[in-house]
Image (cartoon, rainbow, N blue to C red):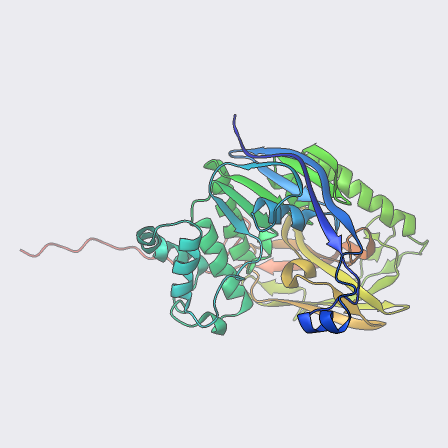
Length: 413
């Protein structure tokens, strides 16, 4: 089978400049043209080799700074390699920075046409698919409003919809399941898998090892810009998870069992992991830990630490009794940045609606070091959540549903 993506000995080198490099021509002249030349250089990627066939999904994993974003930029032709060979066979669609290409003063309708035409669709084809795009994004009531009036979630939904309706043969995805609420995330996943089944080659960058293991055929583990492992997704994801766990365990102190705020014991190296440099001291599910499907849920995480930390990531997931994750988000995926932490405080995540079917679930939380190399504190299966729906659903979701029976009109005599 011919590869849709072929990468051989790919390398990308960047220059490193002086910290006080002049930012303008005037500053450069006044400084006597000093500190303009690069101090040295470094390789963000080196010796990268892999291929992705049509109908396959490759997961790319690794800590922050491993080279994942640089690789996606090269595959998306945003950046160009310093060395090596790259072949991309087919139209490329990219879900890298959703909504970044939208113009705030244009309406949603106008942005759809501009973005889809730039992606390679003829105008008449954009017009034919326009209603499908708007319906998928669930924005029919707002499509003629300026995009600057949209929330971040609305822009992300519209950008995702445009990208997946442009029939790419190759799709580059960066943490796509951080788009929208649980129901919309499920719809995104279904669409991605349908594209894969139709022969689209997909490269997925994700911090979620479970997601890569579940969705991808193969995985590429990058570490310090080089390939640490490449092969079957379950094997590579397992190696990556083991490496993170080892680094966390090396930093894990001895600590007696403690009761979580839900009353479930927290046991080190069992349902609790971390160096405890930052410690989770309490987790609250609001308004309460029993809720109706479709209602709003807020999760508050209290933390404390001995010193201020310049940056950290929060993680939050909702999983079933069997361990299957139905929601798995990080602050890095939601806000594309890390969060500075003072000596103590509270982090709150609000979910506008939880459309889960009736059942018993767990909310799992964690705080991780800025490059994801180890956990500060992580609690699993410690905070139960009971969900009740108005009707019986044999699936994962129980969104609002209505139905009616339409009878044909009798013909006039």
